[in-house]
Amino acid sequence: MSGPLAGVRVIEMEAIGPVPWAGMMLADMGADVLRIDRPEAADMGVQRDPRFELVGRGKRVCTADLKTEAGRATVLEEVAGAQVLLEGLRPGVMERLGLGPDVCLARNPALIYGRMTGWGQEGPLAQSVGHDINYIATAGALHTIGPANAPPVAPINFVGDYGGGAMLLLVGVLAALHETQASGRGQVVDAAMVDGTLLLMAPMLGRWQAGEWKDQRESNILDGGAHFYGNYTTADGQAMAVGAIEPRFYAALLAGLGLDASTLPPQHDRAAWPAMRARFAAIFASQTRGHWEQVFAGTEACVSPVLQLSELATHPHLVGRRSLVPIDGVLHPAPAPRFSRTPGAIGGPPTGRQA
View 1 (cartoon, rainbow, N blue to C red):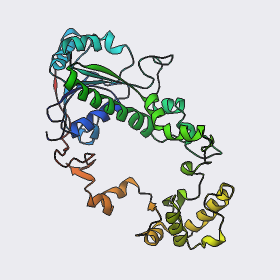
View 2: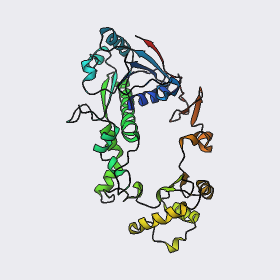
View 3: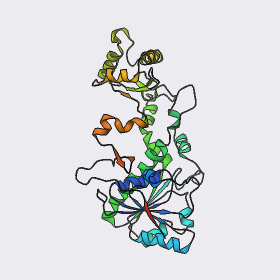
View 4: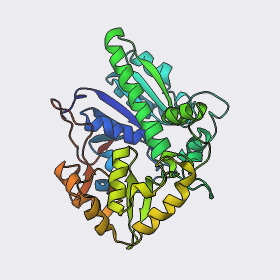
């Protein structure tokens, strides 16, 4: 494999959510990722065509029964030659299997042992079950998303599993991997989705404590409260995304909508936001998405069509950047970020063996 992590060996213990996504990122960047699968399917496991298992791309797979001495021995043999281990089991499970940090670091003192959980390795909720929605609810992020007069809206599992989880795990593992080059010593990385989500909330927490962010949905610039930052339905049932925050962008937005700024309230007059949002909604609803795409093309209005998944492969920008790569008839997101000297690459579907 090519990429900046070429030569780095990673063991990924079978899991769902953030761990396989993090493993995919490492594999894209050139790491040799070996996924250890259990013989039986996980609780949420379903058998899929491996071509569509995008997070498994570029990985080798070994099936091992960790409840047996032979299975544990297989993992420890791999640990001896690896730089990183990723696991996403509940705290204490790896220890009970005989594969906890103490055992693995005794076998390989330079190992980076990355642990991904929702609540963290310690704390009152550490042993509680949960999913992305529970972690982002506890971190306050879920409360900020959705309409003011209805329950919060779950943002799929982008925030907890991937933004606050997998990305946090990657940052921690790569930082520890860098440090061990100088010290020669490994360490445990405790990455919790609730912690990572709180980090994502840092800008809003700061603004809230400064009195600049209201603790109510649809009351702020970025949460749908402002008429110049949000989504609008078009005449054909599609949608346009508007992000005209800066004054000159707002001026371009008004021009495209055929509005005269001199007859309108100031942009940041919060009392006028609901009425302005209703006015914008009526204008956008009067024409199709295609019409508005033409109106705002090449302008500074920060207005974009809200694309459906089926439209991604033909969007000019995504095509121009080769942001989607077809492999065996399946579209994959291209490796990112992009490196000028050591570019990453997409490996094939997961390939495996029995222990």
